[in-house]
Image 1 (cartoon, rainbow, N blue to C red):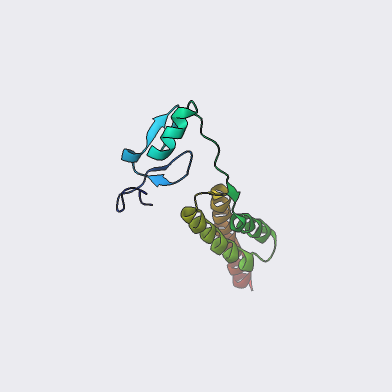
Image 2 (spheres, one colour):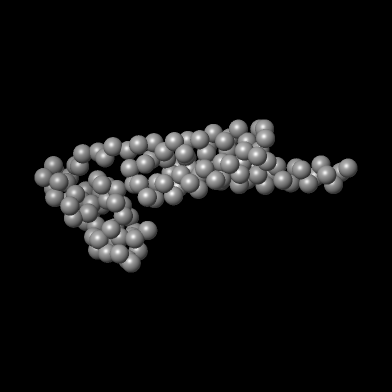
Length: 131
């Protein structure tokens, strides 16, 4: 991620109000929250509180988690790769649009899908080798 104000500079955090990515030089700490220059003015006027940014749930992350969990129990060899693909797509979407929520679901789906896919593959190898 790059700093919004300084292209080519690595961003370290997001503004608590606008959720844009910024480098350490661009963020100011106000009552434990980090704000960019634009949002800092609003935060100071409102006594340190900024109106909440409307977060939209990422449907791709929700469906990735559903596929990952269902794939544990049935058709995992098919559903787990779909869950991995959807989780990676959701993470990319959330990186591009900071107002999308669900990074925890995308990460959980990715971890569950990778582990479950590995177990499905090992199970299939065990079945084939026992024949």
